[in-house]
Image (cartoon, rainbow, N blue to C red; front, side, top):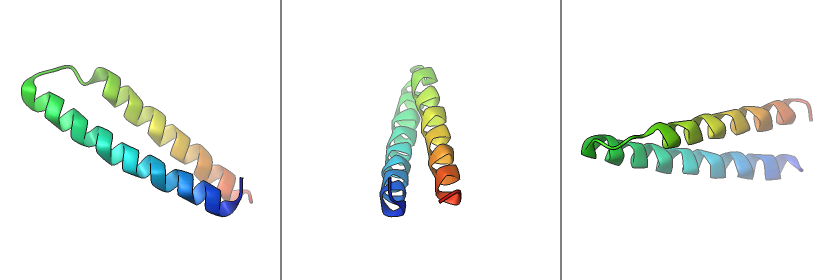
Length: 58
């Protein structure tokens, strides 16, 4: 992947992260479980870290 492709993927992941955070807030306000969505946030964070590391080595 090129640098711009990595940056684009990171931006997409950031937007997804924000969306999932909103979903978690909605579920918390209604008393539902947020465990799966919290796991999704962790996955997104790890993917962003991986992409940033790859960018650092380019």
